[in-house]
Length: 213
Image (cartoon, rainbow, N blue to C red; front, side):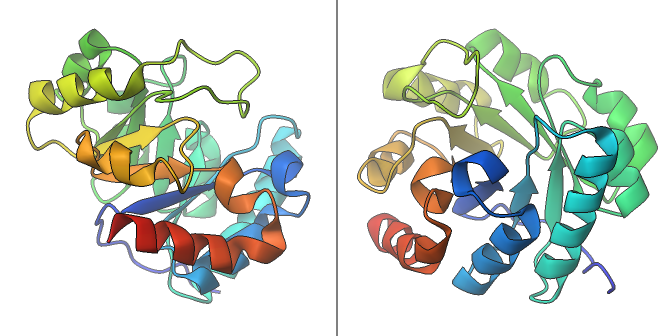
């Protein structure tokens, strides 16, 4: 299966896969999310071996490609390169974006996580396509999450970075989505409230869409 060429446009809803939360494979999640209307999917895996992550991500990329949807790999620049993924999303402890850009090339999508205004202002000077900021609300998807930043700080980040693409992440639900956009986000990254019941992904994705229209 040929991976679709990427012409990056940050989607309003940015789903992230998680095997433990959803109870199904990354490939199954990717197929369900793509069928529901996702324009970009991030595959995140914190518990498998490198080989296990490789195999899961490969299958997820193929599943999403059936719908023409690009896939971003969380953390692992090496796997993104080997698999020909659309790009990578990096955290503060991962490979620096400038090094990832050298490896993945000009056309790769590179995202970067930030948790305070200093990190955000530094990030927009890096070779990244978007920054993520959060956690906006309390979240259980990370074992040791950064401190919650809230909507007020999100608004301050929006003012500080101008029109640089901004993804809000952390504890965002269908009920809270519109408030997050009002605070300045261009996109919302969603995990639990979208994929916790994989057989309701299409319905939940539609509900998110309604909330942000």
